Amino acid sequence: MDLNDTLFERARRSIPGGVNSPVRAFRAVGGTPRFVQRAQGAYFWDANGKRHIDYIGSWGPMILGHGHPGVVEAVQKAVLDGFSFGAPTEREVELAEEILSLVPSMDMVRLVSSGTEAAMSAIRLARGATGRSKLIKFEGCYHGHADALLVKAGSGLATFGNPTSAGVPPEVVQHTLVLEYNNVAQLEEAFALHGADIACLMIEPIAGNMNFVRASVPFMKRCRELCTQHGALLVFDEVMTGFRVALGGAQSVYAKAIAGFRPDLTVMGKVIGGGMPLAAFGGPRAVMEQLAPLGPVYQAGTLSGNPVATACGLATLREIRKPGFFDALSARTRSLADGLSAAAKFEGVAFSADCQGGMFGFFLLDALPQNYPAVMKSDGAKFNTLFHGLLDRGIYIAPALYEAGFVSAAHSDADIAETISMAREVFTLLAK
Ligand SMILES: *Cc1c(COP(=O)(O)O)cnc(C)c1O
Image (cartoon, rainbow, N blue to C red; front, top):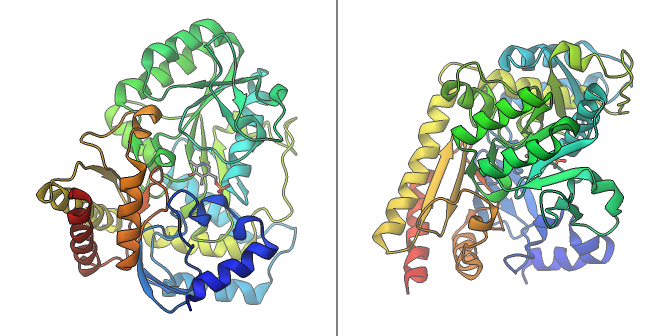
């Protein structure tokens, strides 16, 4: 009897689809989700006690691996002092200072509990600060499940988006314009048509919700120029990339390519909580001071800046800011991406991979895609064979072809080598 099956059957009776977040349900790839019993370092053990090398890491937060002793100690200490007070604590200030010291585009930051909440609040702030309603997002980018963001492109640039979820009234997304990622001409046209009404442009600078697609440097440069020219705020959704692709996030990567580059607002989550519910948004003082209680833009949270979550986040950030941390993590991630590419090439499988810091993506395509329609050309059936082939061999990657992967500091050279050798076995099946 497979204990994952037993648990999943039981879960489905009390929880819709048996899961508390849809992609966990394996609907895209088929099969039964693995119920995690415990995790340590680069591994987790499922309900059958089978070990997996974990390349999801809670979808990004576990950059130090599971159960890092320093983080565990910080959390244990914090728990003994109390779980939640609904009153300020010194640790929130310390975490805010830590974040601001690492991300120079932010003068002030507000802590919240999820990426969804951070993105939703950043949009309200952008709208409040500019006195405008419209926003631009890109097809294939995910910014959480706030109503205004569950939207797909309308029939043309003059029309706004259509809801992608039941329960979102069309009026709620009528201010959201959905554009193609990396398409400069369309971006220019959108600003020419609507520039004076656009409050913000929100973007995943490296889009991890379509696996791994970088905004090209010319495209990002144009995003910045057009926002500045039209008085719209450039909002970087770094929930996934923040403290993950580099210590300073994806914005530090673009700042190397574009002189003086910085976004206006930044949204963060995942790594900043180290696995606890914690997220944040921040930017220039003049904009952030528009927030309640100083300004007219309302935003609040009972558990915001939670003392246990902030202890976990702070301990995590203090580890990753140690000298050499990102060099080592980047090298390991690169060795995985290169090793997988070489193995696929050897077995004659179409494959392309990219990575930055501790985040990677790969496609069963000859060349890296530049936008969502190109990502969707991936062969779903082949991906499923790859996914299940790896899973059977104890390698856990995201159960959907449009999700990024994550390497942690706990992944050893041996873990990477084992992953590549298992992948090579699976590639032989794909090549047939
Ligand atoms: C995960 C994610 C979110 C949503 O964060 P939650 O904590 O799941 O609400 C938003 N934006 C991006 C880029 C993400 O990867």
